[in-house]
Length: 232
Image (cartoon, rainbow, N blue to C red; front, side, top):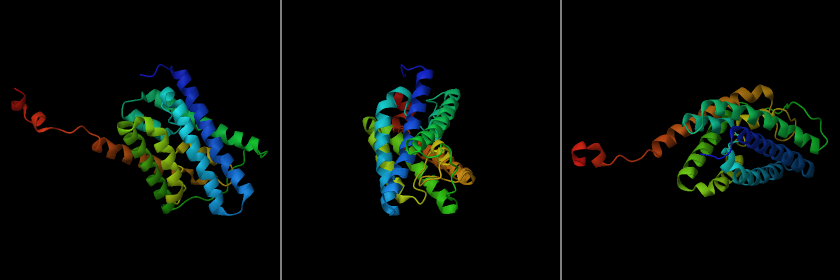
């Protein structure tokens, strides 16, 4: 049971999502200003994102759980580890924090605070990639909590770093981040029109990951437990 009340946990989720999105958007802007090589820009976007996740989850993990992601909060609500009302509030502040993170990044680079994206990210391959990315994220989180809780910040940071490169969508894996990135017409942006496909795929991937891990991590049923006579 966390010693932090809901108000402070929501503040932690807000601040963490602000800093996460500011890093995603800001590093994309910086990298694109330094080189026209798309591979180098992507690398310059990837490494800061993985790094900030390690920092943020380490700092806020014991406070709010460091979800920064509505589908992660959804997973914990479905597991019974987070009350539904709190899960909904988490999702709301994560979305608002993400948008604030985009505005912060724009302000730091003297860009218009709101600049809707025209970057097309749609199609079956992109949606499937988002499903895979979010599935893997949920598996990483739940498996990490079960077997290597102290390493979860590193596991998540490293997973997202890898998923940037092995998914066609560059692994948003987060509806709040996707919504926030629709407000930036820069390297990391996504058209608002493309959000429903991404968010639907992220929800589906998260539910599949939860279902699989619920089965994989289910306590083993021993022969004695299956035979009441053995317990007499």
